[in-house]
Image (cartoon, rainbow, N blue to C red; front, top):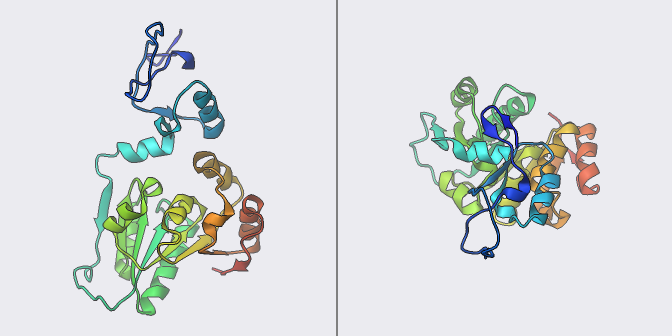
Length: 245
């Protein structure tokens, strides 16, 4: 009943989504309709559960990260290397799926990993939901193609392949959890874990905890014992090995 920044504050009981799969009694009175509900709080699952109890379907409830990802006018931006147009079908292709590409430590070590893979004869591309131009330029100088794909965390396997075909996936950081699950069982996946403990809650709130069997075909490594232990607190000691930086 109040106004904040020019927007009316309404009760969740007043929201309704017009849809052919929802039958509404003529006696029901709804004041609002919508396409999606965006949860702006970090704790998405608790709010989602409350909305589901009110009769809202989960597919209409979006985390704020998903909303911002889909709201971009251009969802795919490719930064190509000079060699990108040269087709060499004998080279195996590694796709590095990375968290947002700024000058963070996990992104820098992904660049080092890309250089090593290039030296080993692979073609290497890196894909991320957000890319700073200066960081992309650094990768390009190394010979690594960079792709900004805003909906990376929400894409399906077939959609990802259309953006950048690959033979192997190196999933860099826990934040690529949804990408790992999408590709698992379809292409070989190495999941490289770096994170501190505070990162986990946010992404598990958005995507759920998932059953460990989803990772049966995934090779999971950590950069340190601390990173390994943080992962295993969520996933019951399934991460055993270290790949040091």
